[in-house]
Image (cartoon, rainbow over the protein chains, first blue to last red):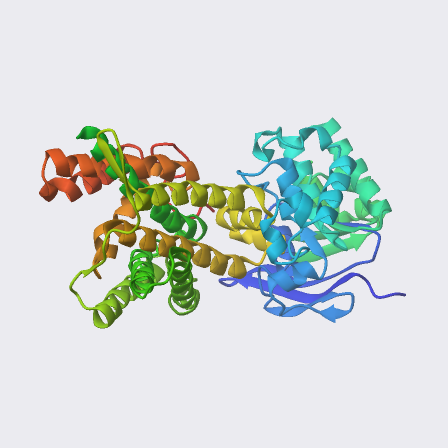
Length: 250
Length: 290
């Protein structure tokens, strides 16, 4: 078997004696959509923050393509090809949709060119932004301030921003939270199309039905502990999961 | 002589505008008040002044004032800000206060505490009842150009977009791979350059300079920044002339002893009644938005 894109072994993170994550083990193979589910407070967001280096793991290893990145600063991990979205959408208030896709491509032009308008500074970045806008169906909203758009579209803008720099791994933190069925379906098909372009996706989700019909593999967290894993149909049938999560939530 | 006063007030106001922009570039991104900017302005003035005295042409003097102030701004960032950036916001501000007093002291030691004088630079024109100097026109022209340049950089270029991203949310900017540290340095450099240019222009306009130029004029730009709103480039463009004219008129019709009372009183009034500044935008008493 080839090296998984992302591999966690025994990752532990505590906050003042509380184990937000304990001994987390998981693998994300290239080109797959992997889901992490669990009730609120199960440690899902802590998991993302630890992967991106925003939190430092107290124990265990995070490996990206076999390379141990556990102690790397955030920006290095990001440049190595991890992008993410946030559970509470974090867009820039002063920027249009178009600008979000440009600001997400830093370091791609030389220092002096950064003082030119984008068309001269970096035509490649401009092209990439056009391409991503078209992919996400945002072209007509190009010059709208991103924060003025409806909630569901803001989520798409955030996803588009994360994808623009061509990451290898995309982390999505509850990408369909607060969305209606149609909007969620649209995001689902976008994610499948993204996977088909070769992108690997790890997502945190609350909505069981959504992940069941989307993910190739699932991990179930409860109070920071991995309680089950497997293909969606296996997880669905697992009594431990039913007890800890499904029973309570649905 | 109301029109003459208005012209003089406008010139002074233009310099306030440049300095207010200088303050708000750092304030908007880091949420800290770099008090040393007032002294960068003074040092820039001295550098330009000295070169003009030595017979160099004006562009050389402006460039020297700008570069000198920018270099000191780099030192302040490296020594006074970077090591303290994780401390509470008041800590780096105190360190810039230290820098500003040291800079004033250095200037006093090099140039003495008595005012240096030069004959007024450039020609004087008479337009009906109004006298206007070449230097005054230059101050006004340079201000318009520099404000437009800063607005262009911040609004339209990749660098400006990255600056705005860091100013609004450092964490998200980092996650996008924007190097927040590099941009912090850049904000200091831009801010220092503006202060330096403003210093050279005002020193030559008055034909005189003292080591207290920063305290007398530079700090007033903080009031201008507050009145215009920290996040609005155009706010400074309105508030600068407003304060400049108010000040000159106060001196002309009320007496110079109440001048600062008017300027800083207005600032306090704005803080109490409209903390987001005249033109709106973010509150100037809250630096970073998280």
